[in-house]
Image 1: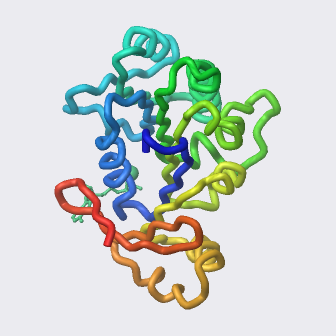
Image 2: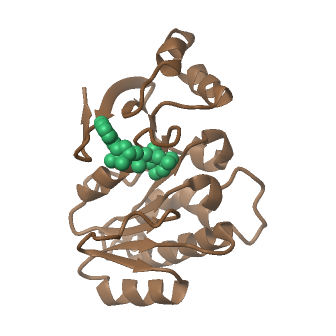
Length: 223
Ligand SMILES: Nc1ncnc2c1ncn2[C@@H]1O[C@H](COP(=O)(O)OP(=O)(O)OP(=O)(O)O)[C@@H](O)[C@H]1O
Ligand SMILES: [Mg+2]
C-alpha cells in the first residue's frame, strides 16, 4: 500500500464473516506505519505489542506528536458522538499530512474506520463536519489511505463508498446489500454471493473479481 498512490478501501460483510481479520492482516503488512484505527469494538490493541490505545483527542495528538518520526499504530477507542469523533480525527490527519502534498514528507498515513456505519454514516452531515468527506475526495493528495469496514454497506456514506478504488465483499446478511453488489458485478454472481460462507471474500477492483479467503491464523490469501 505504501508504495502506491494512497487509496480508499471498503470492506463489507455480515458479523463474523472475516472483515476485521483481513483488515488486521492488511495493517500488519505496513512498514513503520502511521496508522490510526477507529477501534469501535476495542479489539486492536489488547495484548498487541507496538499498539497504543487512546480514548480522547488530547491523548491522540500527544501520541502522534511524540511518535511522528518513528511511526505508530494507534487504536482510538471512541465514545460519545462517534460521527463527531471521526470528523475530528479526519481533520487532524488531514493537517498532519500537509507535508505529503508539499513534497517535504512522502510517508503515507492509514486510517481504518471500523464499524463505519457509526463514524461515516450514510446521512447528510452538518456543514462543519467535512473531515471525512475531504479525505474521501482529496485524501489521496496527502497520501492518506482510508479503509472502512461495515456489516451493512448501505449504512455507510455514499461519497466515501463511491470513492473507494477497491472493495472486499464477504458474505452479506442483507438482501438489499447483496442486490447492490450484484448490480455492479453482474447477475450471474448472485447465487455465489448469496451462498458465500464466512471467511470467503471477493476483492472487487477495476471491474474485476478476485476471490480469496481469510485463515484461522489471521492471514488472508488471494486465489
Ligand atoms: N478462515 C477462518 N477460519 C476460522 N476462523 C476464522 C477464519 N478467519 C477468521 N476467523 C475468526 O473468525 C472470527 C470472526 O472474524 P472477524 O472478527 O474478522 O469478523 P468480522 O467480520 O469483523 O465481524 P464483526 O462484524 O462482528 O466485527 C475471529 O475470531 C477470527 O479470528
Ligand atoms: Mg469486526
